Length: 252
Ligand SMILES: [Zn+2]
Image (cartoon, rainbow, N blue to C red; front, side):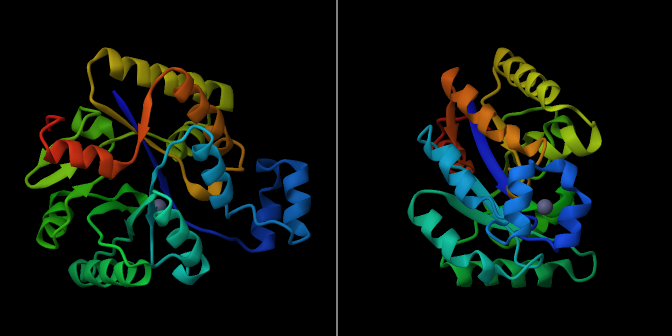
């Protein structure tokens, strides 16, 4: 069973008052560096690179163009793409004229990063058949927005012509919704992964938000990746799975 590492980039900075109102989420050392403008606790690309580099793996990063100016991370992303990370669209859905906004977002990301958008994850995991139909019409190959629980599988599955890579676990569900401690979350994730493996699932998609990698909760990502690597799992990007599905190596 492959472990697919993914990140959504919902923000890359926050006003100081926002950070201070949430001071309990951070370590004191990190907070001081943030307040002194030596560091920005919501920009964790260097941490992400170091964590994944340490086990020789790469991930898929879903980047929005509507939530903050792409210029703030454009150079960093281009360098990461060169070094093997996959960057795709974090589509922000709006119910009014969704098709045109999808086209606009897709094209803008493609032009800014000089990439072809073939994969999507929708912000806030908003998804339905109509949205998928729109992706299909715009030439999208894969989506990773449905939770595994919604589809009843952790493995890739064709929904019409779109390859769906269900989300196995998301940090925001564990810490935001279920209020788990870090220890509990780690146990929960490993139990879920081992269960999926026992059930012969082909993949397990992990979603941790970029901006949370130094927050209480999100910071277990480094432990998680190291432990998965030590347990012998192959850690891959969405596109690695999609290519195997297209070649018929993984059934979907
Ligand atoms: Zn998002």
